[in-house]
Length: 100
Image (cartoon, rainbow, N blue to C red; front, side):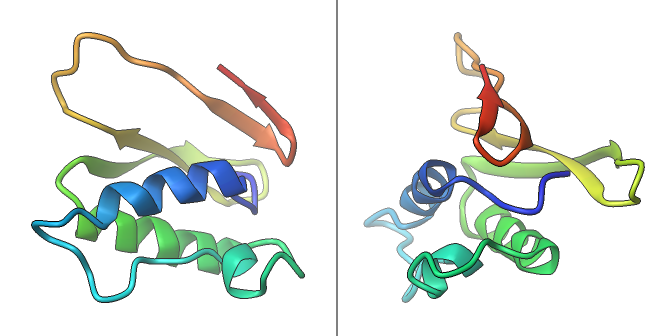
């Protein structure tokens, strides 16, 4: 799995966690956000971030779907209603290399 999340993905996930009815005191932030863009999000930070987003919203689920050759987890992150009529698959294979 890539070691970083794009800022856009992080912002989208964080916005789904903080809703008026169940807003967390502080939404989860990536290492990139916490450092004001000075460094990329590390693997352990990414795992913690995804777990926090998963716990914080019924509209987000994180599922392990395998591992990379380096032994890093590959995770499927579903955002939105579980039975939505339309779905988008975004595959990120390296920083700045995402395809939908």
